[in-house]
Amino acid sequence: MSRYILSRIAQALLVLWGAYSITYFILYLLPGDTLSIMLSASGVEIDSLSAQDLAKAKLYYGLDRGVFEQYFDLLWGAIHGDFGNSLTLNRPVSELLVERLPQTLSLAGLAIVLSLIGGIGLAYLTAYVRWQPLKVALSRLPSLGFSVPVFWMGLLFIQLFAFSLGWFPATGNQGFASLILPAVTLAIPSAAVYAQVLQRGFQGVWKEPYIITAYAKGLSRAQVQARHAFKNAALPLLTLIGLQVGNTVSGAVLVETIFARAGVGRLAQEAVLRQDIPVVLAIVAVSAAAFVVVNLIVDLLYPALDPRIAHTPKVS
Image 1 (cartoon, rainbow, N blue to C red):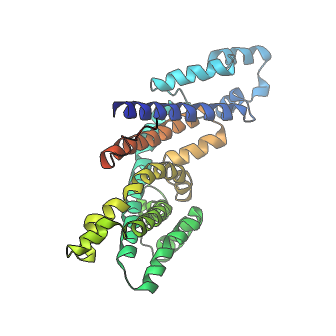
Image 2: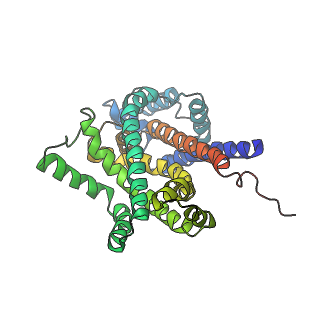
Image 3: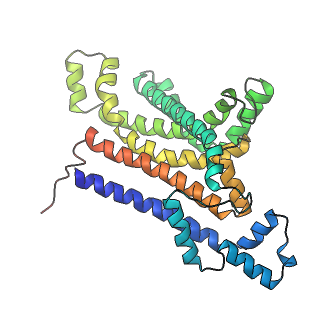
């Protein structure tokens, strides 16, 4: 068991390092000069500086060093929680994250809860219903959920529930009410995935011997589904929850832009457009860390729920 845990932790650290490193080198290859971006943000045109002043500026900001030297300096700082300063906002990146992170965490947290409730509820109802037309209609809903583009869904919700009905604010961070529409928009694709996987899980367990035995003991369909079928059909959801955290974080970029929320997702979009490398790297590091931690927890929970995973027979 300890070997299993150590291997999962090692894989998690490797993923975290890989995400940070790949992002750094991609940003480095993008057209544009870091010093020019910094000077433009300060209202200074790079063409107005002499070659000597440019050399001094590069030396001051550490831009005279090679790409790998800068990479290792940034990586070492990130390991110690120091992401440096924003190139364009001239503020510590950690300070920007502390300001924006609560908005994104509240959005992602509510979206995850809604997606689990909606996805599991839909799959559970689909498995329980016996009337075939309704069962078929319910089973088709997940396909609709993840085939509709998120941006279109968000705009539709704004038009219907904000402008037409006036139930919720269209944009901004004005309390819990302003969180509902973006959270529902972000939750629907994940809920559709959960529902589809759980529906297939239910289909796979209904003919298992333990289900037949439960019926033979006189249990009703509702009791069999709640006590036996759901527990076994829901095991794949653990892996999906870990994977969907990454989708939720990436989806927050688009959703926060649509609903004009001042969160990490919108900060990431602005930083990419401005080529603010320290900010982008910090957001990637935090997002990857969240993804890795959730998946690590899932990996460690799996052997407890299914001991066969931790005790795989060796082939001699």
